[in-house]
Length: 106
Length: 171
Image (cartoon, rainbow over all chains, first blue to last red; front, side, top):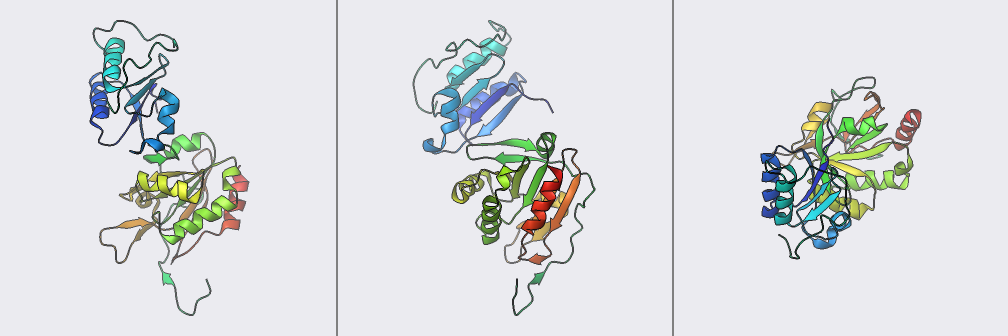
């Protein structure tokens, strides 16, 4: 079994998560899904990997990126894996993939 | 149990036996923080596995079995001790918290894994629901079943001493 380098933290029926899933499938990118619970107090794992308790959160071992906010994630996927990608995945640069804007549940 | 009446006899099960290759399966595997799809073979690749089929979370046998495995320090073995019931991932997460265990649990609401292992228990009085019989399998790193116990009465509980001996033979 292959070991995907991308891990998506998601909540069942969360439309923002499905938005990211749609793009991952469109790009034919393999990823692991980790489902968490609705209560924010139950989301320590997401806080640990991304710094926030919101989902979706995406961790990309190819680049070391850990992102939250579906708009950020979509933009990241487009520029990293899309047809018009701006860069090839490169080693982690801590902070590069930081959250660009605050907000809840997007 | 020492009772003045007969306990329900489920009869023998045509189950996976010692010496046989274990059937592989993939189901959501739940820990105290999240769940993700995992296969049994991923676990056996890392070493021996103790697979414990149990009644749905919340039924008293589930409580008894996991309290006992917790108190006997099964978590300390150099083996992956993993549960499996028809309960949903949400229920498993609650169960892990309530029982204060560090074990992981497969979620199999459609009971397909019990069918593969030949340990189905059709529940009387709960229309449309089947679950596994209580059963324990010790599986080595090659995926070979080294010990198998399957309940023949309802209720029935694992022989924990025997299970400990079986685990100690493979770790």
